[in-house]
Length: 488
Image 1 (cartoon, rainbow, N blue to C red):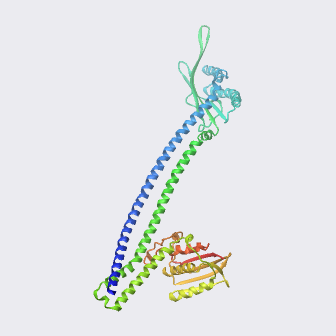
Image 2: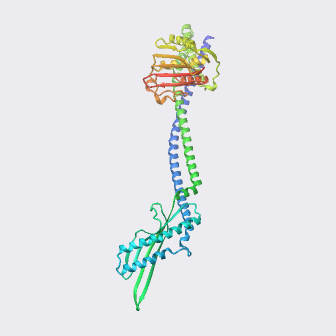
Image 3: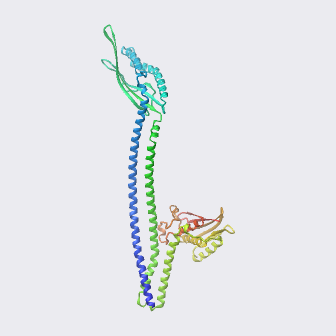
């Protein structure tokens, strides 16, 4: 009967060992495949998204630019219609007024009475006197039109040629104000241009005495203060929709990228967890494998002492596997899922007893405890709170701490527990993640330290379940300080 039971046990252990090995390798292979595909997808997504955003932005810019040009042309065409009074039949002929003055002075110039410079000076003098009348006339007309925006007008002469047997160029490709205001060349907008010629003749004693002719080129400009603002007002909805569409695309891209990166980080953490738990499983599985081979020996049933030793080994490894599974299951709970059974505890007495027990287990570690208050009463779940504190002490010892200082005080109606060690410390970059599930610090100096990355996660969940807070202060090679605050 005993031999049959032994064979059944051997068969069961071999089956469990084989299945665990097969499942482990299959699971890891699947995980590595998924992670490799995910990393490639992230890179492709980034490249494609950047190209798409740049392309879309370029198209949007081109559309907005074309729309701006179209709206600008429409706007200035409307302004030109409003300024048509300058050239209508019932408006004063300002060009003729200048021409009359110009002819009188040109005759004197032609007869040699004045120089070209004096001719231009007289032209400027007559322009100033006539221009005052034009500006007053123009401003009155603008007020009558009740335009929504101020408009300035400028007409300039660019070329004046005195015609004759030999043409005499008075002005050539220059800009001389004819009437209106001097406008800024950078902000003015082209209105129109004109090329015209005029000839006047005077006959004396049957012969042609005077023959005055001109070839004149003019250009007109308008300037509207803040005309771009008016264009942008008309384009408000186009600009808004374009802006929102770009923001939406960038937002979707950012969200998708953030989600993928977050998934990859979680996947990396889970990969580490799988590697860690695989490492933890190797020892009991290897021991069980040796035990099963030992039980397969023919004479093992006759050697009661050895048989009992193998059975004890199998039982210890069973307990170890069970504890490992319990750690994964229990420590993975979020604080919302933890059912607390609170009771009023004088915390310093409870901590002192727990520390005394821990000193017996870790004689090589120096642990000090001090409390600044006679009594600090807190409502705690003793089991979970004990487990959390022991996790912190174990962490301190595992990561090089041989001196641990524990202090307890009251602060702002909170019990404040501070645990300080002289271990290897934690880099600043790991502070935000150190309490995440499955997270373990990536440090080559501690790769032999066993763990599943659940200890500090569990501690934080227990503290949160007690409506408390936990704070980490640590630097590499300078130890670690954990501060826990629990409301009283």
